[in-house]
Image (cartoon, rainbow, N blue to C red; front, side, top):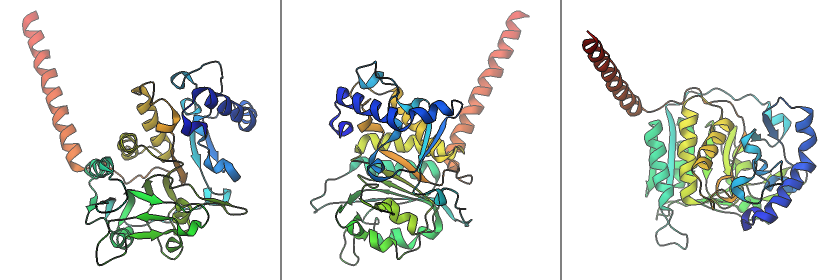
Length: 329
């Protein structure tokens, strides 16, 4: 609650107390470790551990010593799932980015979500489905072909009846536009990672013995070993910045949680006093398998651009080297 209220004093007290209660003794016992895997229980499913602080001497969000500065943090639903082997598949494409349109609906437009999808698609040389093409049918029918499915749009969460939580796609006359959580339990999702760049995609009812019943959990049951999902409402513009940086890091062979941590740290380097608050940067988390996506690479266009830049720099280097030699002679 103090994260969403953005109140630094209230946040400082709650964050530091939780750190003392949950992590302090563990971290002191293993001082050389810099990675934490969290398997939460109960209300801890709603907590972003990376924004806990280990020092309460400061009074503003920009000065707090968040755990993200010292630790890479990933999450899982169970110990069994953490060590579950990921089956190998042959994907024909790296990523499918889906960004629906919400014209003539009560849902707000998400202009930065569309821009986010275009940026990521260009980066990874995948395919994109936006506006009229961003349908439920596209999402379900093409998941076998892509290493990553990236959804940037709206969700609707039903806390009391979690199986009725849903992703909302473009509405047209011929197909349904809502993918319900209960449908995920009936479908097979063969992609290696699903990114739910949407509000509250890891929010749901806490069920004893099951954990959190969220949309993210539904993708786990459907066979997807990793989800990137959100713990609260995501800022459309901030989400785009962090996602673009995350995929750049991921394409360089970095593990998923390290890639997301680096993206958030890069965001914090340029943050203003307001956006230092964890509400703006700490919602997205990695759940499940944390290994790098080794076959994920920059698009050919990026390699060409960087190759041209390198050739120009080398040419300038040799030109000025020869010029210096001539002057000395």
